[in-house]
Amino acid sequence: METKDTRISSMESAPTRPYKEWRAGNVKIAIWKNKKTMEDGSEIEYKSVSLTRSYRKQGEDLWRHDVINLRRNDIQKAILVLNKAQEDLILSDNSKDEE
Image (cartoon, rainbow, N blue to C red; front, side, top):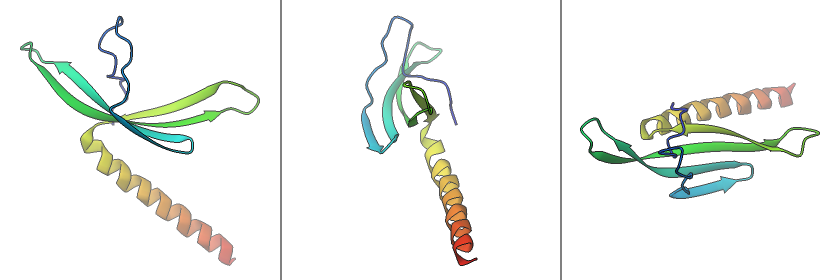
């Protein structure tokens, strides 16, 4: 998983808007179009994904944002481990209900 923000190409450039984005409550996922200059001077385009969870700490008026940046090959891995975590949490919750 990549954590570097690649959406700003230089200090003079402003961040770009996402290519596409979806939101469910306080969780948002966005697809970004990126450009990278290769050593030979050529430029390539690629897309990355950012997953954001927004929240406010108790007693504060400031919104905070946890962001994870993913590349194409990371998405399926993230889905797999999130599904495993969800499965474990659901199974654990069901066993508590039975006690």
